[in-house]
Length: 312
Image (cartoon, rainbow, N blue to C red; front, side):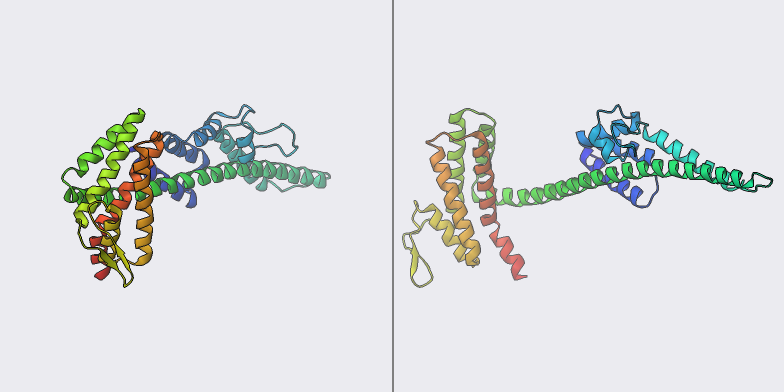
């Protein structure tokens, strides 16, 4: 199991532990520390270090978020590690239980003794409320951060699965479209690892040639124009690469809105690839052009699969 899978599993388990109140606050801190280590979450790690070891006073944000500020205000706060907070809470609760069982008074000072007894109970109850409040807010802060991490990991896993499924389908279609298509992609990847402007230019040229290869595969050049409706025709000769791709989407019976979106995307990409061969383009821009080209061509090459699925 990879670190991300392990982090996802532990995060899901910890959220359930908190919701079902299966762990003490100190145990939750330790379990959350494992998640922070697995995903490298600096913010959560910083908070948990303070909770495990105690606060120095410089952790202003976490002091506030954990409810550790003193009721009197100012710079006073409760610096105890979460384990000592729990111990103090347990001691206060035990004191309250003991005091509640010893309230039989007699004699001349019964009223004074009764008041003092009630005062001691109130003091311990007040202490218990402070420690319980801190423990509760610590757990709540951990829950919020772990829930955010969990959903990020879940989305990342779903995204990776979708990308892997799509990549498998698109790569297979590209291999069928052109025997050298996947080799072109490998060359693009190699060139984009290099920041040399000439390599970037070559990578964009390869992207343009990949578009040409797909057009040749799905809609070979024709001497006769292709009719779209009664009034519109497209020249679909060897040089009319984008027209041929547009004609293919029309021939497949794709809805006009989707056809127009693909046409605009490919027009822009083809133009950027062509311009990039003669102008300075950053590595980051070239990478995004390549990714967008890959996705657009993948959608066109898998139209058959989509259409068959819709027909079913």
